[in-house]
Amino acid sequence: MVAIFKTNVKHPAAAMNVISQLLCAYPAFKISFDLEDEDRILRIEGTFFHVEDVVHSLLSNGFICIHLPYDPDSCPVLGHYNH
Image 1 (cartoon, rainbow, N blue to C red):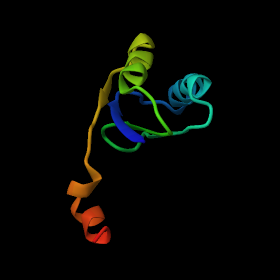
Image 2 (cartoon, helix red, strand yellow):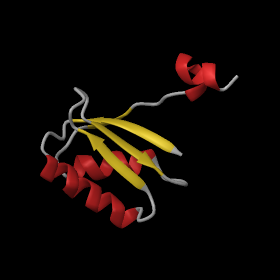
Image 3 (cartoon, rainbow, N blue to C red):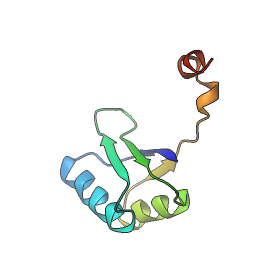
Image 4 (cartoon, rainbow, N blue to C red):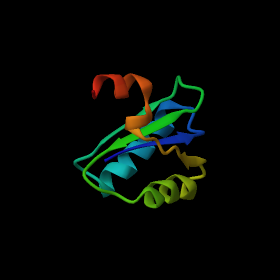
């Protein structure tokens, strides 16, 4: 499962703090930020998790966090390679 979130995390130190907290709950997951993207993207990849738990974790730390659902089959680039 992969989930993408729009956040307002701006600083690398804050991003590392968020990643550390999330890794406590999901130690085997891949978690990263793209702070150069205008949406300050948080990407989480793992076997199973509740999107709401991730959103709540960031909100409780004073950050905005919006899940950006996507369908890989509807992506023109990915759809092209899946045929």
